[in-house]
Each structure stands twice: as structure tokens, then as C-alpha cells.
Length: 212
Image (cartoon, rainbow, N blue to C red; front, side, top):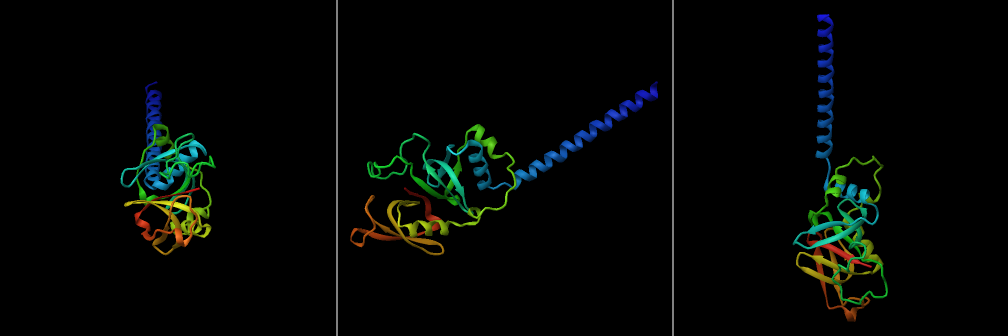
């Protein structure tokens, strides 16, 4: 009888040790997975969890806080709609300039311009959730310069927020590490006679580009 009890105790102990070992392996694997996450990964997971209308609060370098509903993530940037649903226009553009449209402004934000992400508790947890493996999308390999060149090609009026202030105009061209902005009034097409001046802005100084 005592031998039976001894074997039962040994079996129970071995089972407990095996479960503890498996748990330790799982914890090590989870720590390794989290250790490999980048900020871009966590933002993408956060926005996927909240749905297409979920707003993420971002503090940009310099202290400005914006709400963005991410739509796409590139190699070193994210794009989306600026502002939470029903929130006031956050572009800082002149009131009434875009009164003819109710569409929220769109934006491009370099990941390097993010000083902090300000998530709620649920968003924080969602940002750590494992995401399904997927083939690398084309957008995920596209750099900031490519996106800015598209805005230049479309001749859209943009507001470029830099570490030195906000400037409205049209992107004339995009080089390897900077852009040329023709500065003119909001809502005015880019015509040479309406251009007030030009700014060559290094990408590293760009915090936010908004447009409609």
C-alpha cells in the first residue's frame, strides 16, 4: 500500500514539474515574441483590434497630441484620418476653408515623429496580442519619400507640421531626404503668383502632413 502511495506521489510530482516546465517554456516564448515587437507592430495590432473607426492618441515630438484612425502602415510611416469620429477638425487650417466637405482630413505621420502613444487599457492589451502571420504587403515596404512623392504628383494642398511650426502649401518635389514646399494660402491652388516662398524641409523635421 505504501508503494502505491509512493508511486502516486512521484507521478503527481513529475506531472507538476512537467506542467511547470511547459509553462516556463511558454513564458520564455512570450517574452521573446514581445521582445521582437516594434512600435509599428503594436500600433497595427491596436488599430486592428478597435476596427476601422478606432482612434489612437499620439503625442508628437514637441508635445502636440492628435487622434488618428490608422488606415495604412508603411515601413516608417502611418496614414489615416485625423481626429476621432465627430471630433473637431485638428488640422489647424483656417476655419471654413473646407466647409464644402464633411470628410475628415487625412494625414501621414512619420513613425520617428511619435514621441509617445497614449493608449487606453484595452488598447494597450490589444497592442500585445499575437497577430496572424501574413505575406508582406506592398505598403509595408514603402518608405516615407514614396508617399510624399504621391502627394506631390497629385498637387494637393497640404499642411506640413514640422518641429518649427506649421506651413501650408503644395509639395513641389521630393528628394532623397527632404521635400520642397511652395508656401501659399490655404484653399488657393498652387500658382506662381500666389506663392509666398519656398521651404526645403528635411524629413527628420517633419511631424505631420495633413490634406484632403
